[in-house]
Each structure stands twice: as structure tokens, then as C-alpha cells.
Image (cartoon, rainbow, N blue to C red):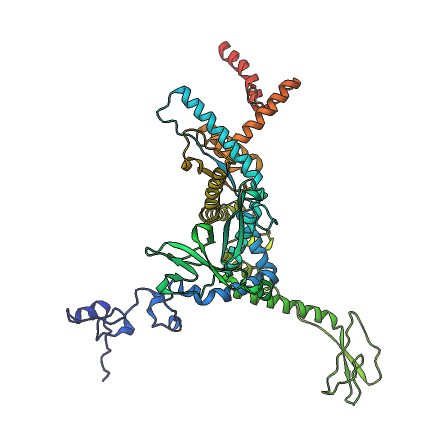
Length: 533
């Protein structure tokens, strides 16, 4: 007689059978129950299945993981950026889109007119405008003098700093005061330093030093321990190059992207893709060599076994090895006892392109750019999919521009520049303007190029006319200064008036454009027709 089948205990029954006061083990299941039959709250956190049993991870903090990995990640990231064309393309595309020709400031300093009458308000607005114009002129004079070594302007330094952040994970910009006798328009210059200048292994809990950064009692940064010279330059740095100096935090702009709260140092942006970049480069190189050698081999010579060397071979060396000299398209005359079998090398196969494309997509995703920008392959996109991809990519770029470049570099540099300009007498605050008012500024990145010029311009016009935006805002989105454009328009109109010329671009004309002129001409006729009806 067959034994009755056993019934498995359900989750509810297992829980009900356990005493109410039973304790639980680390898995969350009551002690005494069959843990193997309990479903984990998360698949990846269970640790009991075949797929996750070998998945073991460490509980690294935001700084512990960086401390033990940063140096090697930097070396590998820079190695790939030097040698791998796709790694360099990813870095170049990110730098080009984040900085381009530069993130430029537009002073918005103004005297508060609260409580003023019309006369005083008009005078204050005029003084504010004159001060902003003076700031703009002085800034453009200083941008060419910003680099402490004289190799780049301020916007070139922006690009170098961002490149250092992407390749090495972080970059430091040191603000260096200068003497008035140095002849600079503003006695301030900038020095861009790679992250290697700050020793990540310099830690001293008693002195509140963590990863080369000095902190105070409440956890705020007070200084950076920096090497005088780059530690990777070795003897080029001189005998005192590896001496560390504490530089006040107020003089340092630390440009990096924190991926976790509390993270003190930055990781290279290519870190998730380094292994794929390295392996793909090796695979493509091996495939190229294979194809090259396959093209060399037109045929093979079969020879009856004897003591002679193959045709075209060098004499054997002491180890018995000899090299064959291959030339493309060569056929050798055979002896009577020789035979030829032609080479038939296998091709890469139909999946080669799909495999490389998918690998590049993974690299582009890890680096934060688009596959099309990385590879130059737009064959699988149309206008709508391209617009959707670019909109998402540009949203990320704008976040990096304002969260990192503007806040971590441009903002402190601008405030220090204003301070030194006022202290040196290059700028003078107008009556009623505070120092905080002079700091007011709007940073404008290079404008995105139009995807569809006609539609893009028409949409801007419609937004302005509908009141959804302002002309100043749209001008700023284009990377320009509305006040500068107004001044140029005024100059153009004055010159046209002096020459007796009239252009449709002149906003004083009733017919501001061809379309408006046509509407104005048709309006009286339409009104007459309506009256006749």
C-alpha cells in the first residue's frame, strides 16, 4: 500500500506554527523554520539560489572604496584615453559638450531700488548698468591673463579641468594672488592641478585629515595637502617636488562628481567601462592582425619530407627556428615533389558588427554619452529618435555644467575675482551697491546647435509672444548677452539711419519681417471686405 504524499508547509503555516515569542536569525526567518523554503524579500539579497550564491560584495563606505582603488583607476583610465580611440572619443565628446567654447558669465549686479522714487530709481539703474558694463570689459581683459603659465585663457582652463575630472576623477584649481606690479588687469591667476597632487593615502584621524583633505571640528573642509609637483613626473619635479604643503580650502576649487553622500574624492568617469574598453581594444586588434595575416597567405606549399628548408625561409637559428618572408599576392614556382593548397581563411561572420555595436553602446552608457556621439554611427536613427536621445543627453550635460563646473569652479573664481578687482581699484562699487550685489552673475554655457533651425526659431518666437518666456531668457539660452545684443542693434540702427537704409530686422519698423509685412498689407483689404459684407 502506497504511503500518503507529504504536504509542504506554506509560508503562512510555517509562521503560524512558530511560537509568538520565537526569535529570528539573520535571514529574517523564525528560528527552527526551513529557511531554504522561505522566499527572500529581494532576489539579489537572498543568497540561497544558484544565481546569487556566488555574489559576494563588501560593505565599502563612500571613501573606503575610493582609497584603495583610485590610483589604479586613474592609471588605467588615462592609459585607455591615451591608447584607445573610443576612450579618447568619449572624453572628447563629454568635454566638448560640457564646456565647448566656455561657460561665460553675465553680471547681474544691481542696486536695490526698493523704496526709491522714480528719479532715484532711474539713476540707480543707470549706475548699475554702467557697473555691469565695466565688469564685462574688465573680465574680457582678464580671461587672457587667467592662466598662471600663460598657455590658455579662462575657458581653456575650464576644458582642461573638466578633462582632468573625467579622466582622473577629479581636478583642483588653485587661485593664486599676484602683486599689483605684475601688470595684470586683476591681480589673480589660476593653476589647474590633477588629482594626483593630493595624496589619497594621507590619513590622520587625530589631525582630522582624510584622503589628503583637512577638516575642522564640524566636518567642514579647511585645507588640502598638495604636492608641489606632480608625483608622476618623478625627477622632473626636482628634489622638493614631493614635499606636501597645506593649502587653504578657500584658495582651492575641487572639481569632482560625488556618486555617494559623504564622498570626498572623485572616481574616473570611465571606471565602469575600463574592462570592456581594454578587452574590446584587444579583440579588435587581434581581429585586425588575423585579417592582415590571412590576406598575406595566398597558398601553402606541401613538400615531401626532407632536410631542406621551406621555400622563402631563412636559415634556421641555433634553436632550429626559421622565419618565412611573406609578401602579398606571391606565388612560388614548385618543384616536381611539391604541391600547393590555397588558403581559405574564415571571415569575421555576420555577428561581428552587432557585437562591436553592442559593446560600444555599453561603453557609451557607462561613460555618460551617446553611442552615436562615441562611434559616429547615425545609421539607426531618424529625426525623432535623435531628438529624443539628444534631449536626454543635454539634460545630463546641463546638470553637470551647473552642479559641478559652475558651482565648484566658476562661482568661487568669480567671487575671488570681484574681491580682487575691488581691492585693486580696477572696479569701484557705485553708491548704494553692496559687495553681495556685485557677486550676482548668471553663467551661460555655449548654446546647443539647432536640430531643425526653422522650427526651433519659430518655437522660440511663439514662446515669447505667448508670454511663456522672455527675449532675454531665449537670448541667454543661445549663449549670448541680451544687453550686448541690444547695444549692437542700437548701433546697427543708428548706422542704418545715417546712411538712409531700412532693414526688416529694425524693430522700430511696422513691418518687422516679411511675414508681418504681408499681414499688414492684407489687413486693410480684409477689413474692407468685411465692411462690404
